[in-house]
Structure formats: structure tokens, C-alpha cells
Length: 91
Image (cartoon, rainbow, N blue to C red; front, side, top):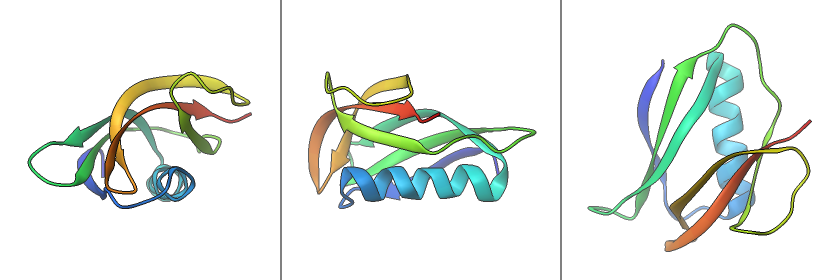
């Protein structure tokens, strides 16, 4: 279901990427925003409907290189700490 959903803030970068990828692929959605929910130690992920499945996501520290195309640069909770990250769509 497209919209904004809460995502645990205690996940590692790899686990957060896997969780967001799973949400995209199961519901045919596309991640459009990811933000830290400052009221709680969690993240808020926003999705829109998509008519096809997209490639996996990767999350790295801001400025670190990764394969694929950077789709977001944001601040999110990683392992319960606010962290500057880049989100990439893998080929």
C-alpha cells in the first residue's frame, strides 16, 4: 500500500536496505523518501505505486561509493543512531 510507513531504527544499513527492497518488491512500490522520525527511534519510509518490480536497494554512509544510481541522500536511524546516508538503486 503506497504511503508512509514506520521502519525500525535499530537496523543495520544492510538490513534496512533489505527491508525497504522487500516492501518495494512485495507491493510493487517505489521508495521516494526516507527520514528519521525524531519523536521516536525509527524511520519513516514513503512509497508510491509502481507497475513493475525495481532492482534492490543499497544503503551506504553519505559520500561512500556504491554500484548503481543514487536515489536519495538523507538522515536516518541506523543501529539506533542518526546517520547521514545515501540510498542507491542497484543495477
